[in-house]
Length: 418
Image 1 (tube, one colour):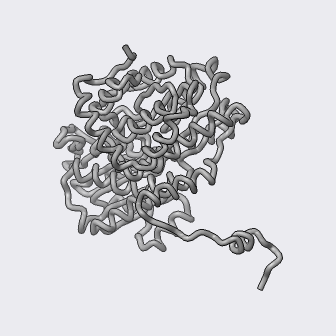
Image 2 (image 1 turned 90 degrees about the horizontal axis):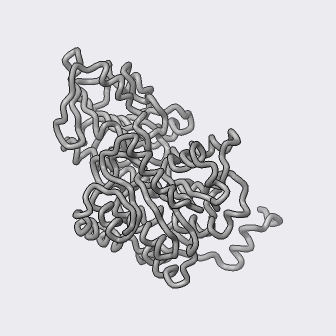
Image 3 (image 1 turned 60 degrees about the vertical axis):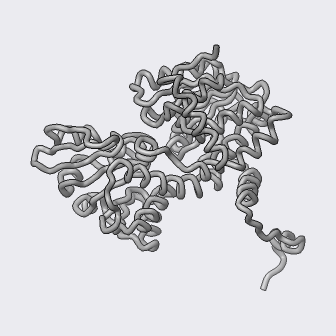
């Protein structure tokens, strides 16, 4: 029997229906599964993965296995696992260690269980698996061909490791692939985060002031969706270029200290700690709602919120009401964790089709090239990006122009001028 630990294996049948449904909306990944299932280019590769256990992730994991890999999996967030999907993966003989509501100790125990499979490739979302390998299992590092990193926060983390000379095996920044961050981060985060907000709070967005913290790709997507729902959108930023872009995109821009007085709903997406602190909470309206769309639950300072409060209660699934000592109420979405995965189902399958096609291609590329690479953070190959985008366009029935020979030659010519 395969080694696994999930909430309830009896949920497998319901989980399989979810996975089958996702497959129908991920045509690029399914095409790649069919393409690689015969030759099995990942045969001999052992992949340990640490990524949200959703129906889309199950499609990726089963595709990796169809391509020949041995796979072991854990979730990358204590509250993001879909227990039905985890059960379906376990019932399909995948070593999966994940359930919703993990303690911190259980979370890292699950990662350790995936490492018992002694990977030669890693697939991470947030770099907790990568960091655990470096901190506790350096003896495994010589066996590694390489790894990939899915999210902005994780890429920042591994780049910091590389700059400090601490990174000991090559990592591909899948998050920085154009077919990932321009689509997953913008359209996926924008739509799924508001899906989570609405499921958790049931509020009307139209007419409210929505404060978006951070105007990277995720923040851009959040602001666009908020405006589309009829909100007055305020952006807070620490980067002057991004702040300028937000203003020229038509949003009001101000420091959080000022925005705190105006906002009805706050969503952070910065990858930085203490974006909303007790100082800001003291200035907020009675009934303001706080949420986070960044990877770690450090953007809203929940310790400060607790210290300001005389009590809290859960008023809806994934929504806690904090009664402040001065009589005001503040509401926290999803315990300050990723609102789109705690309160909803994460990104839609159609956009994860792109991201997970990139992950599969990263594993294939690293299995061939990883042994010849130095420990560093590597960009996703542009030719693979283009292939993925073209494949997605084809599944959508969209054709595009192609450069003629003359145009291709002109693109690299330097003698022609005015």
